[in-house]
Length: 112
Image (tube, rainbow, N blue to C red; front, side, top):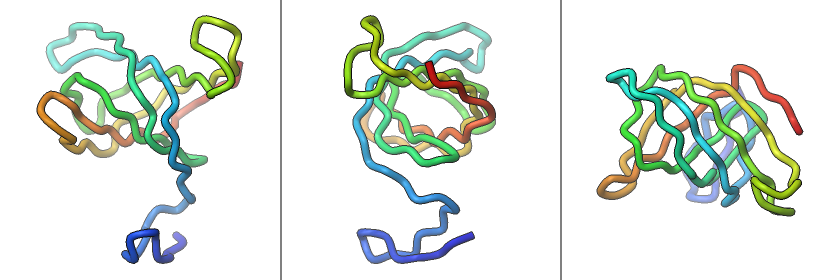
């Protein structure tokens, strides 16, 4: 694992460098009670191995999610390049009341 100083001067422990972004996404999954959800969300950063996404559902570490990310050349509805991925939540952070950040590691992905 590479360790270097990040922009805040602390040691970066991630194995892959991250890119800050604000890409629109749709996150799908099941809540702990088994109820399916689909939510518009925002990807705040990404790397070759995962993403950090902001959403409104209380999800848990270890949960499987599907995410469709639209790159900034268009919209999810109108022909923009997209990344579809399935992944596992490896960390959650409370951002504000009712807003959760989730780090998701890729299990599989496909560009469309």
